[in-house]
Structures are given as C-alpha cells and as structure tokens.
Length: 148
Picture 1 (cartoon, rainbow, N blue to C red):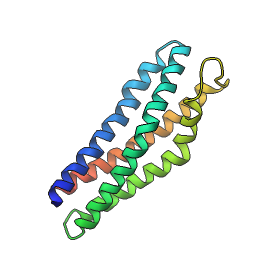
Picture 2: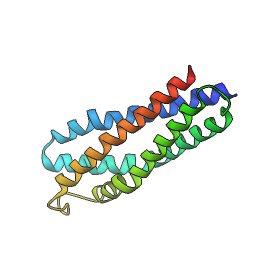
Picture 3: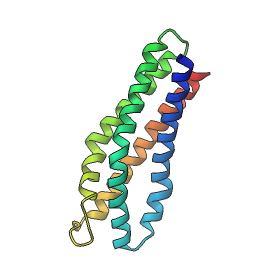
C-alpha cells in the first residue's frame, strides 16, 4: 500500500511540475509573442483556467506528501519526503501571497479595462512563477530520490 502511495504521489507531483514548467517555458513565451490584445486575452483565459485547477492540485499534492511522510516515517527516505513537503508548503504560501493576487486581477482584464501597468504586473507574476517552479522541481526531485 505504501509503495502505491509513493508512486501515485510522485506521479501527481511530477505532472504538476510538468504543467507549471510548461507554463513558464512554453505557454508564456508563446503568449508573450502575440499582439498585445491577443496576449492579454490569452493570459487572462489561462489565469481563469489554471486558477481553477491548480489550487486543488497543489493542496492535493501537499496532502499526498504529508500522508506519505507519516506512513513512511520509518523508511530511509522519510527525511527527503518531509523536506519535499516543506517545499510544497512553501510553494502554496508563495502562490497565495505572491502569485494569486496578480492572477486574480489578470483574469478579469480585457483590452478595454486592463490597467496601464498590466505588462509589468504579468512580468512580476512570471518572475515569482520561475521561483515557484524551481521550488516544486526541487520537491519533485526529492520525492524521486526518496523512492530509491
């Protein structure tokens, strides 16, 4: 049962990392290359779509890691799982404090109502997102190592 939990948790976190990596290094560069109105509309739509899914994914991943940490507390990789959980908790805190406020504004913007500094706000979101991606990649790597 613990082995199943470990694999499911690692896959769930790994897919989340893949989505966030793709946002940072594939989707945002594509959107940033579009004309301003299309770019802004695409980023607002992405913010609405992913803003609805990612909170559940982040909290669910953290919950799975917490269960793994408790259930596998006597395993040799338990410390790595706890550190991975702490990193995922950090990513949730970062999201709530830094990224979600910008995303909540962005997802309501249209070309007609966006603020003058919309590009600066989205660049700020991207910088925070790069840091968050690094944090969740580190957590994922620790989970993979804990499996061994």
